[in-house]
Image (cartoon, rainbow, N blue to C red; front, side, top):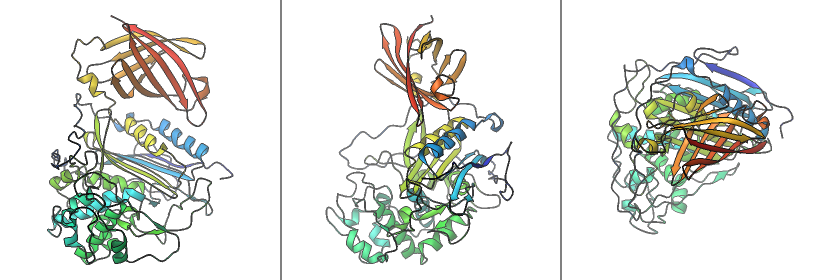
Length: 518
């Protein structure tokens, strides 16, 4: 374990910052002047045993844009510090981009503990599976050049040997299906700790076999993205690393991103859960796992997928191509071309997470809010903290906390409106008010403190939601804590538990009893 707590070394926004020497101000990504709208994609029809793909959530009314000066990320920074302290994470770096600008960056701890190298927004972290949307973007670049057809067999752009037929026809394993994990290829991953890497042909001959029918179901496959990497090399005549540099990273100005472990610069060492450095390792599926990148560069990449471009530079991909990457299918309703598709609080997210020895990462793109969030850590002991931090930062930056189920109710539904009563918490009886609005907002006022709730879900006779608070329970001791509501509708009353979850420390529950105010 680390013998001493690691401290914050970078805490920055565009408007107020105390920035160490040598850390440049975050760049602004110019718009042209507003990004060209990216059309909403229609699902790709696929014969499927699952005829009910996840539908697009019903839209609540739009939310006014948040002003950067109104954003206070201190609670998010506290989450990061708590995670590092209690989980022994050597470093965490995070950033938020909004409407073409980086509005918040934060680096905490040491990228390299032995050398006392501080983590900054330009530290290059191993990205693990966050490599996949980058590889998929390179495939789309080749598609725009007319060198790859998404609906042609991947074998057409692979050298021999190609994909073997265990089940089904390899000609049905198209580029699109491989990128969407629906081609029938197996999971496959392997880390080579100093052992010689097999060549690409050996990997294909050993592992590239169809284990399910192409188009039958979604089956996550690192091997598939390794094959896409090999297709990029075969078509372009360049190494995967060189093509990614020349066709994706350099045009976007991503100076702190590359394939494989960088030989110099501020590079995050991978650590296990005990804080011990993990020996370097390599893969036979670089396109799935091998990219290193910085938080700042990932914000730039995410903004590209929202239609924002660098000053004086052409767009990497046109809106139609970006829309295709968001397109799902009947058998892959939650995964497009390199992007996982997830709905949170009625808002559609494009995202990818990554995890492997010494690596925990996430990149989130939110088209509705023109927002990008990333969180990077050089440890395997993070759990789901990276995704919790990313969503907390997104809410601070203006991700609307809305419940589509409330928007769908009739305006005179008895659930809507104000509910008042008490919360019995740790022997104290606190006045409590809950407001459920027809526009999807839910707010709670407890002992005169008002909070907007997020993660609101409605089921028959049940309402669940969350908020963040540092004062409701004595166990919080001033630390930001999650508060979980689990209320039931009983005989015209809302009653149930309100639980304060203090990360790595405590959970304490109170009882709420509310009645309609009308």
